[in-house]
Length: 140
Image (cartoon, rainbow, N blue to C red; front, top):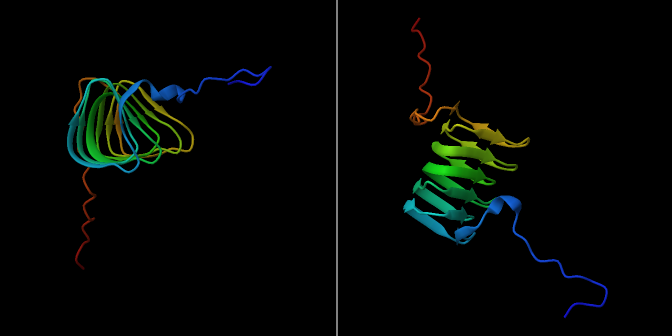
């Protein structure tokens, strides 16, 4: 019951959380291929492949090592792997992305770490990240 003279404010989710239909919590560990419709938020650990034409939200505690083929991805946590987004990629502090990105729209906030390349065209394929080959030395 509210106190006299005070209004209770409704609890609201963060503006960029969308209407996530499914949430993989901090304690969740998942390995494999995940495909879905609607919005999904991951706060746990995921390895494998994620496929959707919709929204993927990567929470601040998430650790994802996967190839992402999504409509839109919003990254607050850690993602290692190539990202192909049909609509947009947003990396928000303190997010970290290590991988190559293909998307028509990219937004990176100050304080983010992004190690990879970005191609902003819809028809290009993601080039997989490969470890740097050692530089050959000349025999003397």
